[in-house]
Amino acid sequence: MEKYIINGGRPLFGEVAVSGAKNAALPILAATILSDGECRIENIPEIRDVSLMIEILYKMGAEVRTIDRTTVEIESSRIYTTASPNDICRRLRGSYYLLGAMLGKYGKVEVEMPGGCNFGVRPIDLHIKGLEALGAVINIENGIIKAEVPDGLKGATVYLDKASVGATINIMLAAVRAEGTTMIENAAREPHIVDLANFLNSMGASVRGAGTDTIKIKGVSSLIGVTYSIIPDQIEAGTFMIAAAITGGDVTVSNIIPKHMESLTSKLIEAGMEVTELDEAIRVVGKRPISKLKVTAIYYPGFPTYLQPQITAMLSLAEGTSIVTESVWENRFRYTEELKKMGADISVEGRVATVKGVPSLHGASVTACDLRAGAAVILAGLAAEGVTEIDNIMLVERGYEDIVGKLRSLGAEISKESFNEPAI
Ligand code: EPU
Image (cartoon, rainbow, N blue to C red; front, side, top):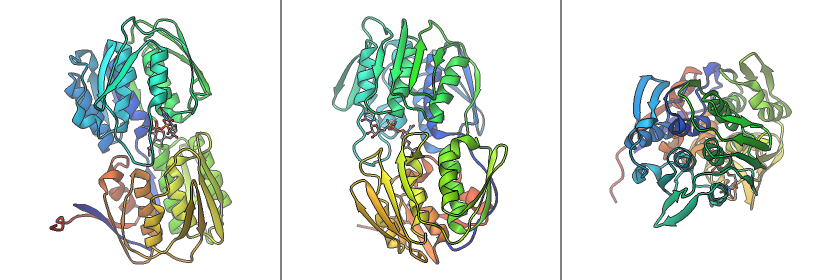
């Protein structure tokens, strides 16, 4: 069993470079299936979810060459099976992108129901509704999604009841090689949707309107192999920005697109922090006191749900009472129980957390409940007095590249240690 051990109370100083975006890398890797040639993907983050996605492609027959730590070449035209490796797919939410990509290219696929972080029910009804509108026939048997397109994919208009990132992506993947035009209405607008559209268009697809709530896709019959570099990870960037704020440090977060960070930047300024936008970087100087905030986690360009746990950790040290509302997920406050073990004063009712600021947090033994919840307890541990031990850290490593090394380079006292499992 591995744990992070943090000796907190040290402000972070220096510069940290952000890696490629997990939530762009996963669909883009899946989208290489749609190409008739070889794709070279650059700036991929070195994280567990990405390794799993590459392993899935490899096990289905794709030729995969690792060029260096952040670059991979994939020739997916060698794929020889439409059955994906269940043991890996069930460990990864993004494995559901095989649905759209495989239907688009091969017209058939079998995928295990996807895994991923547990923050309430995570249905895939909108993915299924969208793919069915394009002509797919989908059955779920014993946890395996079996999909095929008996009469070929045909463009259609799909209205999404919720602006789901995953459903928008899956429909885009299938539609780029469908016959005719597809319109996705109430589409998700996250930066990784735009990144996927740019990748597909560079291969010869016709995707217009990504980044707005209406995406129009004209199907094409073939797509070429290309070289493409993935955008920086806005969630990793945001996590380091909040790390500077919560520790009262001075950190420049580089290799980012500042525009993607606007909702967080404005909240940090409202909380009293000094935030300077540079060319491809943002500098955050943590000031005291931290002012209370009202934060509503919502779809992009609103405040991201995947930074909600981290900002709540910061607000636990604010002056006054903050209100944090989660409007995307039903059950994304489980981590507040962990923050309470460190002295935070938080009460949760439904989708609203009331965070009464306390003067200080103290170290404790806590758990990473999911990827971003893990980031929240790390941030709290960095600011707390004394030693914090965090277990279940493989969930953190699903999405943060070398978080220990990066935090240490900013002066944090954090290490990863192995412990023997206690005998039962
Ligand atoms: N939803 C449905 N039906 C569906 C799909 C989604 O009702 O078929 C609902 C969900 O229950 C939720 C909302 O729609 O209430 C949004 O879900 P979405 O599909 O956008 O989430 P996702 O695709 O499962 C992606 C990210 C998440 C991020 C969310 C929200 C990827 C691989 N994952 O998840 O990332 O939190 O969008 O933006 O892009 C993370 O990185 O920490 C993470 C979990």
